[in-house]
Amino acid sequence: MPNIKSSKKDVIRSRIAYEKNKADKSEMKTVIKKYEAALDSGDKATAEVAYKAAIQIVDKAVSKGILHKNTAARKKSSMTLRLSKMA
Image (tube, one colour):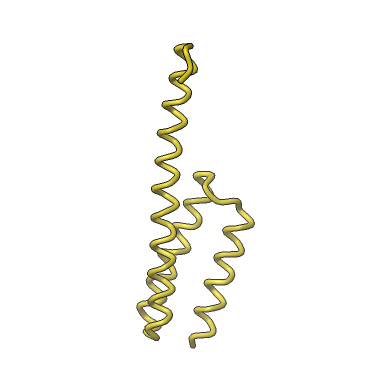
């Protein structure tokens, strides 16, 4: 633990940011898993609703700086392809 007051604050701020990012990333993974489960079930209507939620949360992760924009584009593209192949 640092001795300087501002450094102590930096450690605390860093830990808080880490926990928030971890929670957001976990939520994103959960929503994507729900989308994949909806695809596996074969119900197109449920899959489309889950797809919209997954795309929205991936975009939110990019705006928060959790995902790189190219990573998000790759994830969204693969999700879109899987949904369109379901038809």
